[in-house]
Length: 273
Image (cartoon, rainbow, N blue to C red; front, side, top):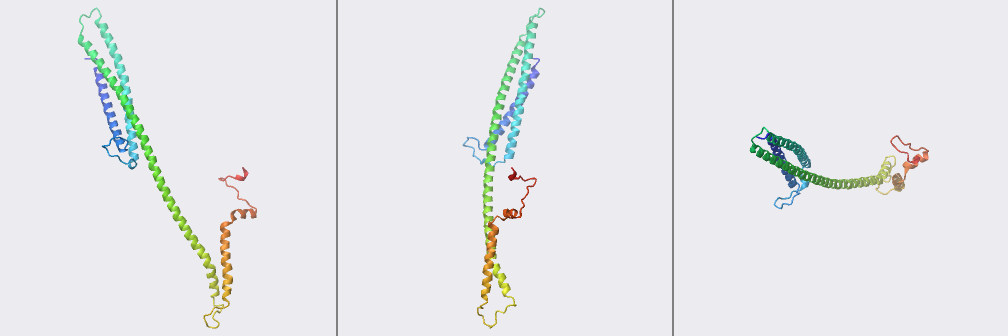
C-alpha cells in the first residue's frame, strides 16, 4: 500500500464532485440558451425572448457563474495539492532507492516499485483531468458571459418597446388634451360673444323702461340703443381678450413701474453675467 494512497482517493473524490457540478452548471446554461432562443437546433421550437422573466434568468445565470467560479477555484487548489503529492512521491521513491542500495538491504521488493509507478500514473491522470476541468470551467464561464450580454440586450429592446408605447400613449393624451383645450376655448369665445348682449338685454328688460306703450308687438325705435351698446361692448370684450393674450404684459408692467424681478437664491441673474 502506498503511503499517499488516501490522499489520492480524496483528491479523486473531490475531482469527481467538481466534474459533476460543472456538468450541472453547463446543463443549466444550455437550458437557458434554449429559453432565450440562442441555439441552432431546428428540432427545438424558438420562443420569444422578450417574454422571459429577466429577473429570474439573470439570477440563474449569476448563480451558475458563481458555482463555476467556485469549482474552478477548487480545481486549482486540487492541482496545487497534486503537485505537492508528486513531490512527496518523488521523495518516497528517493528514500526507497537509497534503502534498496544500503549494505544491510538484501532483497528487493518489486511490488513496491510497481505500486509507486501505478500511483504516479494515477496522479498524472488526475492532473490532466483537473486541467481539462479548468478548460471546461473557462468554456462555461464564456457561455454565461455571452448569454448575460444577450439577456441585457433583450432587456434593452423590451425597454425600448415599452418607451415607444409610452410615447404613443403620451401623444394620444396630448391630442386629447389639445382637443379639450380647443373645445374649452370655443366655449369661452361663444360665452364672450353672447354674454355682453345678454347683460344689456337684461338691463333693457327691466320694468324701468316701458317697451309696450302702444300695446302692439312692433319693433320699437329704442331697440337701436340695444345694438348701439351691445356691439361696441362685445367688440371691446374681444379686443381686451386679444390684448391680454397677445401682448407681453408680464414684461411691460415691471418696466413701466420701474421695478425688476430680483433673482432668488435658486435663480441665476443672467443680466449680471
